[in-house]
Image 1 (cartoon, each protein chain N blue to C red):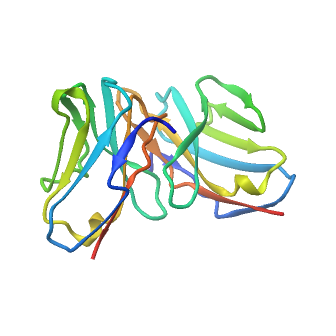
Image 2 (cartoon, one colour):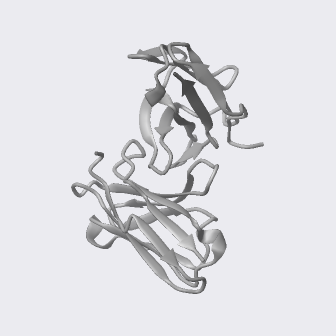
Length: 111
Length: 109
């Protein structure tokens, strides 16, 4: 079982719509959860972090965490063409000094 | 700009050659991380320093790989006898993974 899974294929959304991304993780002891945005050829950029169950909003981004079900999601409201990128989910593993990343989900916002 | 500089940005090398990458945090943060990202995958942890001490190494870090952080400031990652499978983006982060550098893209031909 992979530590972090992002199984959805590329996501195409019309401009102005909501993009929804999901991520599951295997380590029940994980305490910290992150979403990164990565443009093609660039390094990952941290956009959201969440540590407790529930929703956390930052501008057009909302992260949702459900520790009982071991999933994290990211909503992008009012999607813009500049949101077209790969989104990486990352989890801080209990007792480890590192993050485990999912393979990422590509989002394409269609004008 | 995260303040973490990596050099070079791109490196093309022939199989079997040695390469060295450098990472410079903006200031002497005590923690520094190296990750590797291959095409279509998320970053994978390689190693972690606290000051000059290398505290954790991934099994991905074979004996051809060595990382150093002299004096707890900049860090270097060396790959000896490069193989085509080493082609990847090598990412440095300091003091946490919230601050990745621009990365070094290695292509082994």
